[in-house]
Every structure is written in C-alpha cells, then in structure tokens.
Amino acid sequence: MIIIETKNLTKKFKSLVAVDDLSLQIEAGECFGLLGPNGAGKTSLIRMITAVSPSTRGEIRVLGKDLKVYARQVKAVLGVVPQLDNLDPDLTVLGNLLTFARYFSIPRKEALRRSLEVLSLFELEAKRNSQIFELSGGMKRRLLIARGLINQPRILILDEPSIGLDPQARYLVWQKLRELKAKGVTELMCTQNMEEAAALCDRVAIMNLGKILGLDTPRNLVAKYVGKEVLEVEVDSTDKEKLLKELKERRLDFEDAGNKFFVFHNEANGFATLANPEKMRRRPATLEDVFLRLTGRSLIE
Ligand SMILES: Nc1ncnc2c1ncn2[C@@H]1O[C@H](COP(=O)(O)OP(=O)(O)OP(=O)(O)O)[C@@H](O)[C@H]1O
Ligand SMILES: [Mg+2]
Image (tube, rainbow, N blue to C red):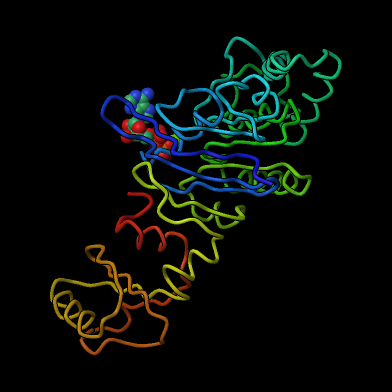
C-alpha cells in the first residue's frame, strides 16, 4: 500500500527551484531515505510533505488524502522531527513534551505516561526537570526525536535524525528507529550520511538539485551504478597524466577527484603506469560512490 505519494511536486523560492517536479511513492511500513548533499532540496521536500510549507505546484497525498484538503487529519498521524531544534526554551524537558501532547489533544494523564515513556526510550529520564539550555546538543536532538513520538504516529518523518549525535547516541537512535519500523511505523528520513541510509533504509532516493537521480534498495543502487568494488588511487602530478591515459585506453569508468581517482572496476587489477602500487586501495563500493557516479560530486564537500 502506498502511504505517501507526491506528483509533480515543485517548490520554488523566487527563481530558485528547490524541489523540481518530483514524483515519489512511499510504501507503508518501509523506511525510505532521501540522500543528498547540502541544498539538494531534502528539507524543502519534507516541509511540504509535513504541511509546514506550501508547495508551488503539484500534489501530495498521505494515506490517500490530499494534503491541501486534509492537512489537519494528516498531521495527526505524522511524527515530525525537524532538522533544526525548535524546542521551547521557556519550558523544561518534560514541559516541552506535555505541551506538545496538547496539540494532539492527548489527555493529561496519558500525556504524562507517554512523555515518561519516550524520555526513557531515549535515555533522558534524568533530565526531565532540566531546562532546555542545560541539555547538550545531542540530548536536544534525542528530545526532538522523543517529542516526535508523542502522538504515536503511523508515519515518522525525520530530517537528519542523527546529526550531532555521538556514535553511542547514534546507535541508540538507529536501534529505536528499527524497533519502530518493526512495529509497523513507516519512516521517511533525509540524511547526508550514507552509512545511516545503508544501515536503516529499505529504499533510498539519491537527490541533487531538487531532483531524484536514482531510487532503489541501497544494495541495488550500488550494484547498478558502481559494481562490487572501487579502486582508490592516490595520484601526484607525474602519475596523473599517465594514469588518465591508461584509464581511457582501457575504457575503465572512473571519477577524477583531484589528487585521487575512483576507479569503478571489479577485476583485481593493477595499472601499468602507476609507479607506486601502494597508492592503490581496493574497497567495497558504497552509496557515496553511487552519488559520485550520478553527480560527479561528493556527498559532503
Ligand atoms: N526559505 C528559503 N528561502 C529561500 N531559499 C531557500 C529557503 N529554504 C531553502 N532554500 C533553498 O532551497 C534549496 C534547497 O534547500 P534545502 O534546505 O531543502 O536543502 P537540504 O537538502 O535540506 O540541504 P541540507 O543538507 O543543507 O539541510 C537551497 O538552494 C536553499 O538555499
Ligand atoms: Mg536540510
């Protein structure tokens, strides 16, 4: 069943096209990732789907309902974790959760029960009476995710869920997202972190300049656009010209990243023109390589 659908969705800021005629279908129960660099249009897309920002053109349906008509009903089933912290600095940690629960008309007693539950889920019980300014960046991030769960959403939409988290907190969040998915929650997240996308997402859309350039399971994307392995070759100015010539003669696919070549090539093979073979490293192909192949750019520059 398709739970979120966009048709020819466009967002313009004056002449800048942030989301460009984008049509997308997200299945109920899947974890779907939008992977792209700064400015790709991920947040713009998510803000339209969560009815925070209006579209310039196109259609959005959530649970089959047109968002323009049913924004209120749709918002009731969405859990939203924004990219930027919008916690209320005048309230305590618990106060933030209880106030948020009121937007969903959750009765006070139930709101308290759920608040304590989500605080415990993200290991924040000890901070329940703290002010927001007393929290570290990672704690605020965890609180934002906890807050997104207060209405027990069927669909959880997260803008860069693990940004600013230390590795331990990141694994905690990943684990919780996996548990929620196992309970049937649909997840839509955007991230610049290809490790996160590969670890969590059933399907990933590679996004750049408002468009989707490739969409599939992480495994299929890698197989389709890159192959099994990548050779990283460090080059200095003398090696570079010669190697460039050899790569072209041998008709190998590669990307030139300045002082490094990425060669997309599955045979265990050296290069006749490379003076020092120690400067070559084989490694498994990743989503980062998919992005590089599709755009000629790195995800994070
Ligand atoms: N309120 C706004 N007014 C004008 N331009 C905007 C606005 N919000 C976003 N943009 C522009 O739209 C484009 C897409 O921005 P968006 O925030 O959607 O990217 P993103 O993929 O979320 O990037 P990041 O990884 O940095 O969060 C960018 O070129 C950005 O400058
Ligand atoms: Mg963003």
